[in-house]
Amino acid sequence: MPKQTASIRWNQTDLSIETGNWAKQAHGAVVYRHGDLVLLATVCADKEAREGQDFFPLTVDYREKSYSVGKIPGGYIKRESRPGEHETLISRLIDRPLRPLFPEGYFCEVQLLVTVLSADPTKAIEGHAITAASAALSASDIPILGPVAGVVVGRKDGQFVVDPDLTVIEEGELELIVAGTKDAVMMIEGAANEVSAEYFIEAIDFAHQKIKEKLVLQEQLIAKLNLTKREVQLRKPDEELRASVKEFALEKLRVANRASVKQSRSEAIDAVNKEAIEFVRQKLANDSSRDLEASIKEIKGYLHELEYIVVRDLIFSEGIRADGRKTDEIRDISTEVDVLPSVHGSAVFTRGQTQSLGVVTLGTGDDYQRVEYLSGEHQKHFMLHYNFPPFSTGEIKRIGSPGRREIGHGNLAERALKAVVPSKDNFPYVIRVVSEVLESNGSSSMATVCSGSMAMMTAGVPIKGQVAGIAMGLIMGDNDKYVILSDIAGLEDHFGDMDFKVAGTENGITAFQLDIKVAGLSVEILRNALAQADRGRLHILSKMNAGIKDPRPSVPENAPLVLTIQISPDRIGELIGPGGKVIRSIIE
Image 1 (cartoon, rainbow, N blue to C red):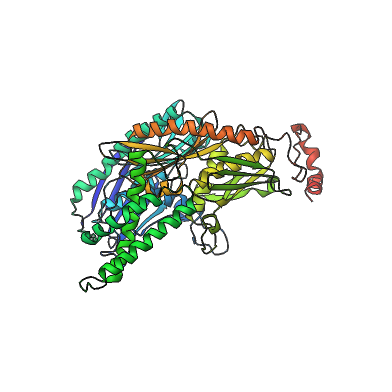
Image 2 (cartoon, helix red, strand yellow):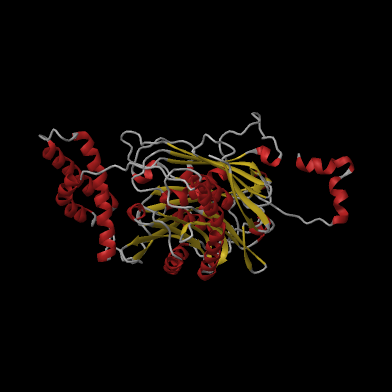
């Protein structure tokens, strides 16, 4: 492939992508440049799916090199090793808008790598990383409905700004990361300082306009390359066998999915699936033209598709959800506080069959977490950790270090609560919140927000207000018709088209995350979803306030005692003492 370059002006600086010069053996590779920022994005994909593959194996890996800012890695090894939490979160940001755009039934393994070779540590990088990843796919013959671009939006002097300096994000009221195509929004992530739904929609609309401008870069490259995407051999289903199974199982699955309790519903569906598999065995027993085991594997997948049809049809055509709720109805909520006697703060939040135990620990200034970014070392005085043990869904799995999902859910809940946490000057404690998910049937990250907020109040943390979270769902129909669902359960998350998590106080939104399974959403759908989410959030807050409404007046007796004493500048010398004698004796 000959070298090709495309460029535009972006924030008064040239933004360019180049292909055909570096990493030429990759199936797609671009060098992405903006000022001092240089990213290398590469993609490779298998020509054929592995035998028996029944899902899309996409791997996205974002890495930051220490040399990109003229540093040598810390620690004993002195080289980059496992990705840090920050890199994992950006990997997820890249994955989420791209995954829905691959063809349905495309099961070839794809590996997408984005590497920071040179960095401007003062600039937000997430939007550029998403755009570079999409550009690598645009420079390849790998099939995808695209392209996609990403932007970061902040607020400065009353105006929205795109891909701003990090100081704008850190000191402002908004951090919004949006990815999308020229027609629709694909992904949203971020945090805010109690902003209104209309403010949020204005920010998304601004972001999408900027995405369209940024997409011109990839459109230029695509036109220059004029690539033909590879032919994909999608699996051809056995339509005759599927028709027989549909006739046998569809109504039975419709009955099974009306069970309101998750465990009962799962047992009923399993029973129908077993009956259907036995039906297939008997039907094909004397049919030598078909591979019996291959047919059974196909039908197992098809039964899942039938359940998808049933769940969506019940919601869309009859307004019936699996647990019997209305589309805007919240599951039953209960709360408990002070459930653990020896901890500093604790609360249990239960919503339907989702339950989170929130535990708060208060530490001294020495307990802060050191975090290394390209911009330098930062200190975290507030942290939230989310744990999702296998028993929460009645399963047996290997227990290890937190995975990408746990890191992502914990980060979202941390952002939601950070907006109400007092400054270090007003509350000189390090705060650690841990969420132990005890049960899960949808929206455990939002239950984490609720339990964490209540637990901080029991620990005497003077937060500005109670924070609640809700997950909104969506069922898309024909002719642009759709149904928005409040407080989605796991089944609705799995079979629905959207998972839109929104957290906030009674005054406004503090965090948000949008994932979709369709090729984009309109601003109108997002506006209606936010309006419905606002009503749901206020309902949840009323239930939480019934358990505990205000922070306790003081920290518990078993918490560390932290005193802050203001010393007049002209007496600093007395504090230090001759040769530092006094200050050393205090420290020791």
